[in-house]
Image (cartoon, rainbow, N blue to C red; front, side, top):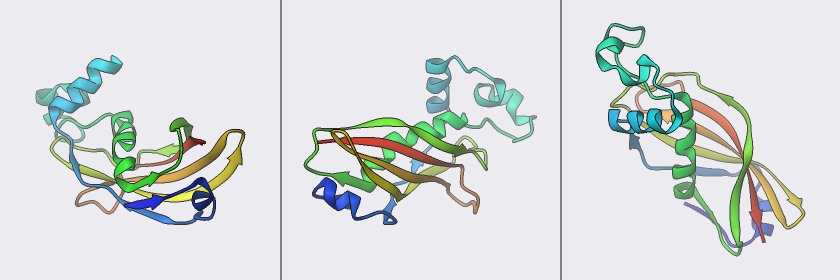
Length: 150
């Protein structure tokens, strides 16, 4: 885990490879809960029988489920001390190059691609690559924008 003891350290660390999280399994229960929370019940996600005959041969995770896991996994990669809070500010470019089949595992890899002073703190961009175990192509690549508040 990469630890920054101050916002000044964050500002000086642009370009730093922050590391990689633990693997997390994408099981059908997680996919179903995401479908319930978002109202996205498309059969490729929630109907294992129909999906078995579909283009992926099984159910797959929602792309936004894969993206949302970055919020759970980024704290395993890096920590910033001496702030009152960090908040999601948005995402820049997001792509889903590879589907995530049920039963597979993903993990997050992060690179601090920018950091700049903003009123009250620092805005960062971390390029998050959601790696899919056993695949050369990532499941998701996104630029996560955060505000770190003094």
